[in-house]
Length: 468
View (cartoon, rainbow, N blue to C red):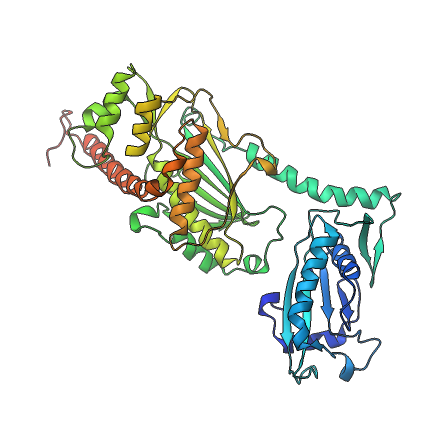
């Protein structure tokens, strides 16, 4: 969207308004010398949102109709807070759906624009909206910007009306395609089980300028950061590509394999794909001789025996807990960097998961299994919540807490487990630190297994293992 300023609205200073001296009213700029009625405020905001966005400025006169010395009379500084609230109420009460808009009060004195000490300017930025048409009620009129006016769109003008409806359909269709576009696997990978996590903010939110113009080096620093220590970062490489940023890990396979992948897109959505280890029951028998690694594998093994599992495929979801916690931490840091609310939505998918039994190294979870039995995933591809539209994503609300990443990551994982029939929501506070321990134990377990595999591969010519 067009802006006469070289900085975001929240960084504007009063002296930045001097550039408006040479900008008359038009498609993207509207001046109001004084406050106006709520209905007229809503009319202008809706018209900008329905067209290409723009700026509505109170306390400024049109430079084509007044002298430069009188262009910035301002509004009384004492009235500015009340006027700002009136603007918010005018938009919320007279426009449906409510468009995104941003306000800023710029106080005098400022000699650059001859604004006196006791006066202020109120600036409103209205971005280009995808959630159109924005309708002014109760009269039900749709306004669009035409040159320097806000004009109603005739109900008989099907071309303009269809274009407005089409904006929202494009967003909805893009989300449907994103959900449906699972990774492209090679023949060797098609039977492997993968966890896919999709995260996004409000899809109707305009992409903030702070993100569009973000320093790539700083973004990479966030993606390379580690929330719980070096072992939880997971990513060997972070680089930019056409659609955004790509993070990959090569620890558990060749670079050509579809390993652990985290993508951050230009629209501030992101996607995590994790190849999941499939364990056989004999793994739990052999691992009982080791002190390190998972803490509850013996209880889980006896549970398998008790429930007559003899050759089940077991999917290790401890790594999912670890990766979700790390990725949510990075995502919340990115949202803070982009100055966006930390509320977000998610959808989770399990691919190639038919007839597998979950394992989580948590006393709470395994006790749940003892009571209700071991669940089995019956579908090859499983998603939660079901569906592919905007409303099919689960909402994670904003919270205020020093350990926001821990809590939000745990919320995501608990809701995912709930979709598998593991309802442990009542144990949330207990599970926040417990899932963190799962992360650490999963790291220790797979470091041990990795060393074991390397020892097995390092054999003498006669086939006997090398003794260390």
